Length: 141
Image 1 (tube, rainbow, N blue to C red):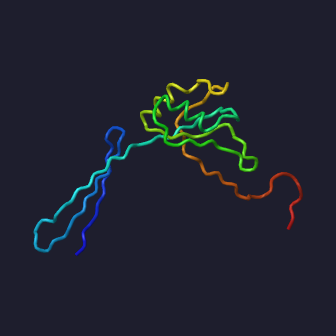
Image 2 (cartoon, one colour):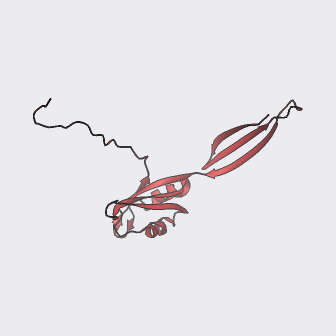
C-alpha cells in the first residue's frame, strides 16, 4: 500500500508555512505513522516603479531600494522594437521591506525625476479582438 500526501498552508506574520504530512500505511499497525515536514517561505511583494528616467539602469534602482532592504529582482520594461526604456519597471522585495520602500521612496528623486512607487497590480489581459469595422460606408452583401 502506498501513503497519502497532504499539504496545508498557514500564514504566520510575513511567512507562509507549508506543512506536509505523509501518512505511511502499515498493515500491522492500527494507527498510521505520520511524518511531518515544515518549511518556512518568506512572502515577497512586487512593486511598480514609475516615472523613471530613460537613462536609469537596473543597478541604479537596486542601489536606491537597497537602503530599504534586500532587493530580490529588478526589471525595467523596454519597448520591444527600439529596446528603449518605457520609463517604468518592477521590483520584488520582502513584504516588510516593500512597505518601507513605498513609504520612503514614493515621491523621492532618482536621476532628476520624482519616483512613483506603489504595490504592483495584476496585469489585466487586454483583448485585441478583430471585431467589425465601425464608421460610415455602405453595407455590403
